[in-house]
Length: 72
Image (cartoon, rainbow, N blue to C red; front, side, top):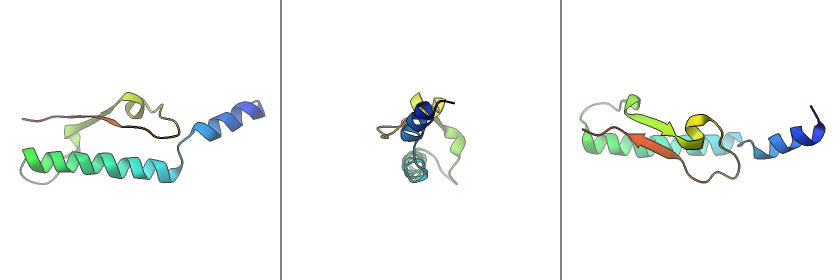
């Protein structure tokens, strides 16, 4: 690949720290919603990532995470 394209990709790709931060945040939101609407242990199948995170097209800088959550 052209070196300029590879460098552009590198600059757009989220860092490991940014990916971990996003995962911590959306998991925390989902667990909080789960605790508010359900009893028992957290079930991650109640959430669905949509938008750029769901499509795995997210880029730097991270902005928002779109999350759908199933409520009773």
